[in-house]
Length: 148
Image 1 (tube, rainbow, N blue to C red):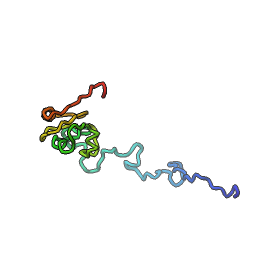
Image 2: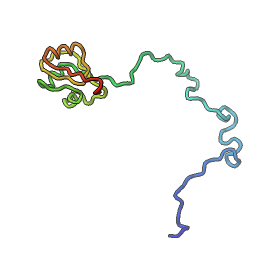
Image 3: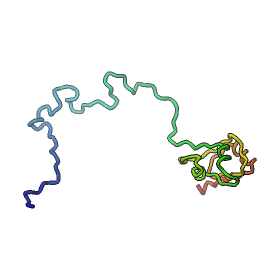
Image 4: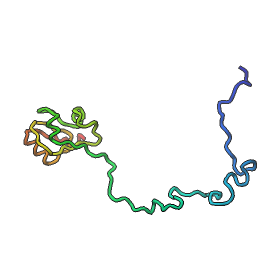
């Protein structure tokens, strides 16, 4: 191999130098006159030609939270899936395939009846569900704010 056989690794093409004579002199590829030929031209992102602008459309009403919603489970599901004395928390709910995954948290609702003594941890509970769980002999463990 000779030095004259080597090729440079950069095959970059030169950038166009507009308005400096040559092929792209005078109008510099912008055409003649008109809005696009002027400096600082260009329409903003809200420009839509002859169509009425989306900026004039009425605003959408309501509110959409940016946070994920709580996973919801009823007492009937807990009664079917769990045995007497088992611990119910988000991790065990995923293991028992009630949920595929828990993003934000779990809330237990009081629909249906429960006959098993379950221990509830790290779940939000409705008042009716709390009453039914305690009536069945279950336990609700509330963690202190310091441990969270």
